[in-house]
Length: 397
Image (tube, rainbow, N blue to C red):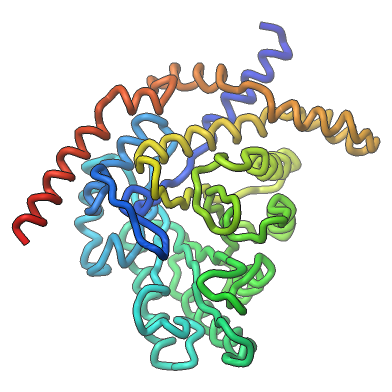
C-alpha cells in the first residue's frame, strides 16, 4: 500500500466509524397509500416486534443503534408506555430515537392542528406536542421531530397570516418545555395533504419558525419533501451556512413524496448532499446533524428494504468522504470546470465496497448484510410466527 493509498484508507475508515443512521419504527409495519395497503406476513404489528426488527438490522449493519418512535402508533398511552419501551431497549440493545408526534390523524385535525382556526383544537394539538416532549425526556430521546400536515386546499378559505402567528406561538411554548439536551426539529413539505397552501412549505419557513421558537430548534430536511426540480444540496448548503440544519429524513422519490428506498432512483443526489456535509466539516464547521430514515416499504420486504437502505447510505456517505477536497477546491478556484466535475463524479463512480468490506470484517459484521439477512432465515421465521398469530386472532374474532 502506498502512502496515498494509506491516507485514503484512513479517511475511509474514519468516515465509516463516524456514520450512524436512525431507522423508523413505522418502516417495519404494514403501511400503504391513500388507496389502501398490501399486508406482509413479516410486518411488525407491535412495538416489541419493531424493536426486534430494529435489533436485527443493527446486528447486521452495526450503524443503526436508535429507533425513531411515533407517539400515537408506538405509545398509544403516552407517557404511561415509557417504562415498557425502556425495557424493550434493554432487551434488544436498541435505544429510542427521535420522538414523532402525530398531528394529522385525529378527526379534529380536519382543518389543521396547531394552525386550526379553533383555539380549542389548537390547544389539543399543543398538549400533544408537550406530551411528546415529556415522552422524549422519559426515554432520554434527544430530538422531537415535527411534521405538520396543516394547510388548506382552496384560496380564500383560511387566513395564512393568522396561521403563521398561531404556529409561532405554539412552537415557542413547545421550545420552552424542552430539556437542556433536547432539540425541536421542524420539517417542511410543499404540498400533501394540503394542495393550495401548506403552513410550513419550504426550508425558509421552517428556518423562520425554528429561529422564532428558540435556540434549541433546527430544520429537518426530508429528501422527499421538495419539488421535483429543486436543488436539495443547495438547501443543505444554506442551512449549514446559517447554522440551522438539524437533521435529515432520507428516502428517494420519482414524483413527489414517494418514500422509496434510499438511492433507488437518484443515488447521485444523496452523494451530492453528503458532499456538502463532508465539505462543511472539512472547513471547520461544527456539525450536529441527525441522520434518519423515513420510508414506507409497501411492496418490498420491510426488513430487507431497511437493510438495503442502510447499506446504501453507508456506501454513498463513504463515496462522498473520499473526494479529494483540497484538489477540488483548487480546481473550483481556477474555474477548471471539466476537471472539477470529473474529480467529483469520479468519487461517485468509485467502487467503495472494498473499504466497506474491510471495515465490516474488522468489526465482526457480515460483509454483505443483505445476503446475511437472507441466509439467517430471520424474515421467514418472523413471517411464520406473526402470520400464524394474525390468523389465530382473525379466527378467534
